[in-house]
Image (cartoon, rainbow, N blue to C red):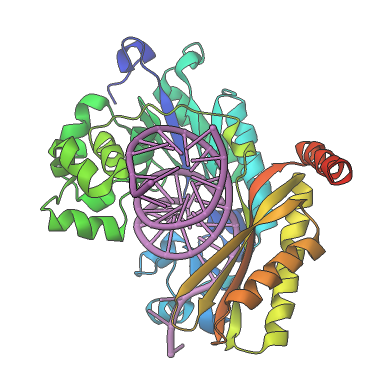
Length: 376
DNA sequence: TCTGGGGTCCTAGGACCC
DNA sequence: TCTGGGGTCCTAGGACCC
């Protein structure tokens, strides 16, 4: 490749951002963890409920070659790939591998923002002394492969959005550079759906406006997009033009905004007592995770999914910050009893919103009890 | 035999306060 | 007396991503 130095890559005042994206992460982790059993085999991860209702979370490239995709129902995937080995997810293992991956990235720079369990942004603008962006990317990739046996794709670009698009464009095991000046040549001919942030619904609406490619979107008038899609319209147009001013923020990972658990039932249930038990279990797991994170919540939300896939969310503010299983259950049950239609339920969920640090919660609670005692 | 579970962000209406 | 506008908070719903 023609890139030889950072100065050539980015002339003045620009930034150099990497997006590191692990390939088929959950599958790769299992293959790395138990190579004799899984390496090179057609494995897939999924099926936390019983198999009849399970879907695949990730499929290895061996399975993908046969048309198997993530989020596909397991029974459907088996038709395409009968020899597929389905592994139950082990999130503790993935979290452990994720930490080790981040540890390797930290050897290059502290300017890292984990974007999910298997991807991270790195701002290597100040890393000129270690090497060129391409050299750094190559070293990261080979280190992840040698030390953890995990393949990844890395995008190199002047901002987070383009780095993300760059890593998406070449998989697996690739390094891809996307310069601002190449956006019109590389991104614009592609269908608008390939833009990160444009999903199925947005695609349909854009098609109706005769916006088919990323280039069409880039050239559409801002006023028109603002009228049709509000803030989101302006944002995706900026992205289509290769613009993104957001920064790599290493602290963002610590600011969780919600904690929740949900579960699809083995069968649709309309028995009140059974559903209460499910709620109790959910309250318990949410409470555990909140204590682990040392946060309390001031807003409880429940989700009810009925047999026909209609979702109902109901929420309420709590009297004071809560984190105990009993209190969470009490609010959740109250919401459930007030809003359940009585029809068979497919899924139940509880989540806590408006999270605050436990330390701050105590200050608030002291104030609360003070008010209780001092006001008539 | 359809379709998991963890999130974030945006919109819109209504209540309420000034 | 019957009426404005701005700002914030709460609730509900939905799109999107991994």
